Amino acid sequence: MPDSKTRNSKFLFEIRFEKHSFLLIKFRPQNYRMFFTVRTLSNRTSHVLNCAFAQCRLLSSTASAKGVPRLIKAIQGSSKEPLTDLQLRLIGDNRYGEDSWFVSSTPKAETMGVADGVGGWRKLGIDAGVFARELMSHCSEFAEQAEYDGLNPRQLLIDSYDRLKNKRPCNVCGSSTACLVTLHRPDCTLHSANLGDSGFLVLRNGRVLHRSDEQLHCFNTPYQLTVPPHPAMDCVLRDSPEQAVSTHLPLQPGDLVLLATDGLFDNVPESMLINQLRALQGETRAEYLQQAANRLVDLAKTLSVSPTFQSPFALKARANNVDYGIGGKPDDITVILASLEVPDKL
Image 1: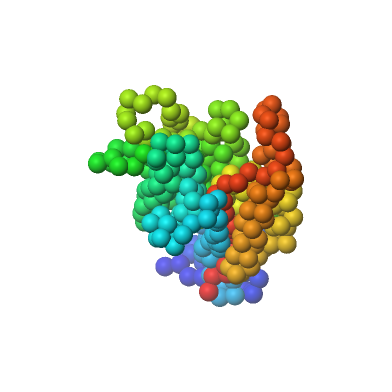
Image 2: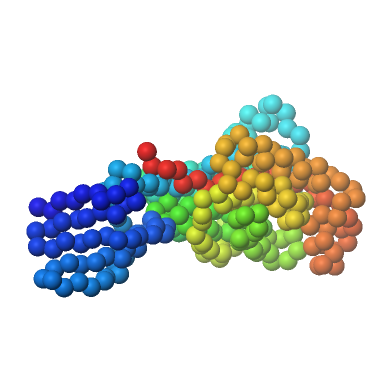
């Protein structure tokens, strides 16, 4: 039987087998992979081997090890239209006006999502916020399954949309955008699926590491998932969840992920967002993240009703030869702000 013993507090240790001895002389950790230089001693010969182990359990009691990556999250939002207490009770949780959101967690993944119901359905007496809420509810149900690993959020969107549109009796109609972001815990990688003009930013050391791209048919007409009130209704946009843009990138402790509907991005320039979040680099205290999310929503709401502010929406309107003038864009706003923490293992 093999035995092992620690040689010193810097993880220089010896692993003994019946016929050979392997002396570890140095290592360096990188994303849970341990890279070793090992000297093999046998039959009076020696040579250096470079070995890479996908997983290694350090045997030293003084070894520092990292725990399971997790996202510390803060959620805030605001409805464009003031709502009465009765209206708030009727629309339920996880909604800000026609926006909806969810967060979920499993041993292998953390998932966050936002959906923005398309307001044009109001002309037909349809509350697209119900559609957005139902879509996010189905996403949450799939994402909360124990085996869900977060590697393919686009498939999560496909499955959720299929369940929604095939639900019988089908009493939910309308359309919405959707943006899903997942953390795959085992390799600390962020995966995304974005359809429409909601989106997300990843910030590291006060700079934008990644930004999602809008998907628009034309100005102010985003890609959207749709269930029409009548199957034969062919005058509405019906995009496919397979068209969602997928990305993935490795995260580091302290990285910030900002997920939001267009009510934020249409009113707050990216430079302002960076200035608001720069001081939060490495922050994992929930109360501070919540305060930052609250400030972002307050800022977006203030700028959305400003008649003089040159908002991102106004600039995009001008670029598309749309006579919008200047000012913000009143809209529902949903923000999920998350910071990556990789705690020390106890």
